[in-house]
Structure formats: structure tokens, C-alpha cells
Length: 74
Image 1 (spheres, rainbow, N blue to C red):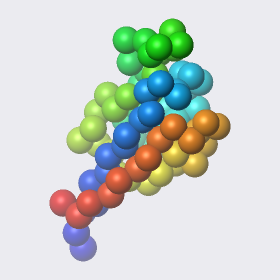
Image 2 (image 1 turned 135 degrees about the vertical axis):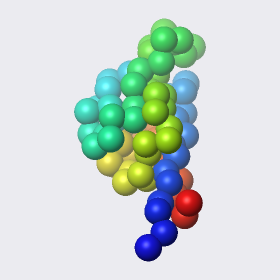
Image 3 (image 1 turned 60 degrees about the horizontal axis):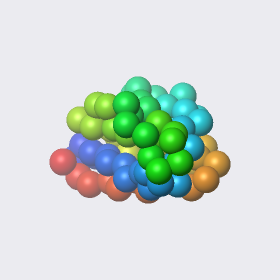
């Protein structure tokens, strides 16, 4: 069975830094960035992209639909 690698893209300007995605991530891939967006919020980013499995738990819990999940066979 091929291993699946995941990747997320966060709409940085839409993200309000609620951290629900970070809590939902089973692999602790997501953390808030040190930088802020145009609204002054620390936004979600991939801290450990090599660990992402593409489960989409982060996208499902995001209240503002800021996260898009991509999956590819590795």
C-alpha cells in the first residue's frame, strides 16, 4: 500500500488564529505562525509538513473554511 502524504494551504488573510485546527490535528503538524496577517492575527501554518497524513481533520473543524487539504501518494 502506498503511503499518502498530505499538505495544507491556509488562506492566511482569512485565518483568525482560533487554533481549532491545531487541536484537531492527530500528528501535531499545525501551529500558529510567529507572523501576523493583515488583521493582526497569528495564522495557522504547517510546523512539521513531513508528518502530515492528509486526514483533513483541520479543514473539517475550521469555522471559517480557511484550510484546503491536498493528498498525494508518496
